[in-house]
Length: 356
Picture: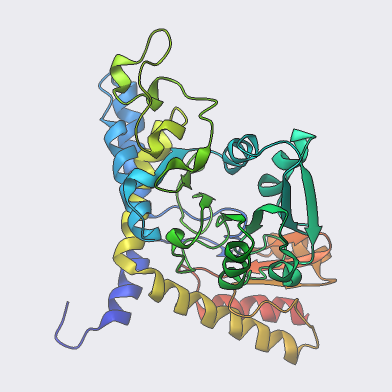
């Protein structure tokens, strides 16, 4: 670093060194781009397996777990490593007594709500996201909600939801898949937090985490296999004699190649800092919202979110993709997602295309 360089220059140079998309990629809410260091780690891991000399990818799992724990400000002993939010939702659903009420947000992502419906003997109640905190009542056992909505980026009022849940003795389950990576989330404020890592955490697909309470939250370890043992390599045959005394008892047998890359992606996010990523992302989203207003378009109100959803423009997605601009069509809405590898020029390119 030169004598006149500062944090912003460090941020931009790090990002430039790691990402070089060949298109205008504004679709992180669907899948994040892989940084160069993760691509290198994946290639090394794949080649090691092909050569019959696999690298220690279980060490990568532990490094990724520790990194995720630091990012969410909890001990690594409270973090389980797996591959799917729906699987973890299913475990939490299995922990609830018959007839328990689960409060959810209307039209939330299926992985955070559907397993509760699959139980068949729970009372699942859906209300508008904005009314979630006000809708917690004495009989509510669990409030389950995405920190940021996949469809349109609206951010849940997590402090209000937590306060209402505590007042009525309910637990909280937060799906942070569309938030971790840009939203500074303190997982310790909630009972359970789950997230896939292939979006805003720019990890390979096949990586997900679950944060549980110190007392493990009363969750039954229904799919515990050998990796869930306190001594995994001594737990390969027959019933596991002793489950891990930590959240590792909820580990799924890991997608090792994916974790080899995830370790490096999460390492990069720690180097950049979530606060710097958030400021970068939100500035771009605000630039897009302002430009939309100039074009006469009104996005779904989602203050403080890098996801911008524009009603009635979803049909433009195909043409934009042909022109090298990647966005999503969600129920007729055009959804653009702005992340660390995007620039003001990307925003202007999309606005220019939409103006035609």
